[in-house]
Length: 312
Ligand SMILES: [Zn+2]
Image (cartoon, rainbow, N blue to C red; front, side):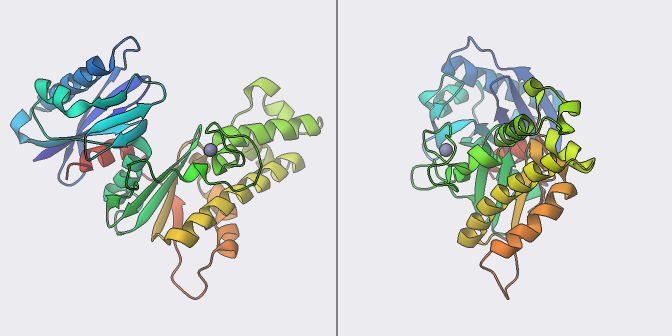
């Protein structure tokens, strides 16, 4: 038997055919048509699923379920997409529409949750029952996995780890609150802090790496590696905020593994060697086995594999 995982993004929708060993055996991607209605997008996903099955030479009847990772709020039990930011879904019940094209059980989940589930089945946390994933990108995404299942609260929208306040009355966040972890530990937060440090330090090497308009999440890390003091301060501040949020999460959930994905995670060991000692200092876990903090291993495939496993 096979499963299909779909990653619905604002630019592209991807579908993967996944076998029972959680391996991707075929993959296909098409643009997400901006002019399409919610119903049309659901049909596009169903046709894409049939295409990936056909290209792999597998019979549609051998597909046990389709799972879809949605960039927004979902009611997974009812199969309803409650809300998406950049796509036209509003309380859309997608099962009926999907099954008119491809009659197969359909499951949905939030995309960050699906990535965490993918890592739990086939990636960094595949040997653990309880694990978590955070994604450091434009925002801070989070997924809580308990007993190899997504935990998302009674209404399906829990697990928004990025919107935990770590600085009371701090920097404004897109959600309307101030001082959210996301405002400090996302790549966006890192870029803001890097820019502020550049303004305060005209002598910094960071000015040689980029202009004020094209600061990236790598700028401070690159300048720090070359010995720049202002950049080292940015990196230390950024990692301290990150450690604060991670320690809060570990103190509450004590997952066996907490893996980190997203753009900033590409710093790899360079990030971990600064982060882990700070977290160990802040965590309430003396004399017990400690959460292992590591970099996620599946990259963009995590969301596809996790979505596929929604139906397992
Ligand atoms: Zn927020």
